Length: 110
Image (tube, rainbow, N blue to C red; front, top):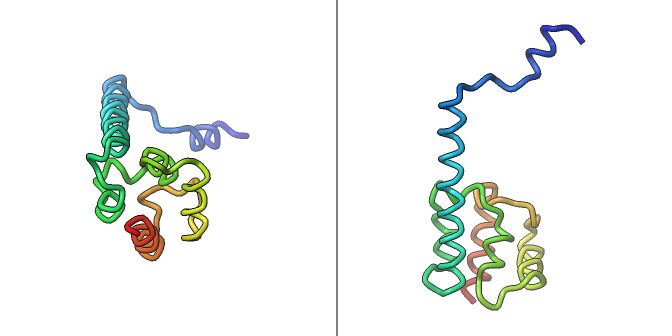
């Protein structure tokens, strides 16, 4: 492998400030998601409303993980819901198609 190929395959160099800023953004998102899961567990947030119109910071969260935070929805029920809607357990909220999103919201509202 030539030096040019090695340089092309590496990620771009980031300054310390850029890395710290990215780390700070990631921490803010983690904290917000943890609070969201607590709100889902306590009933202060609706999973249907969240999936219908998700905030930007929820788009990279896994649908399966959010379903697990819903009361009376364990691993088996969450898996069954996703299988019924033909959604992979590794799918993120932002990766849902309109059909998948609509089917899942309809199932959850029943």
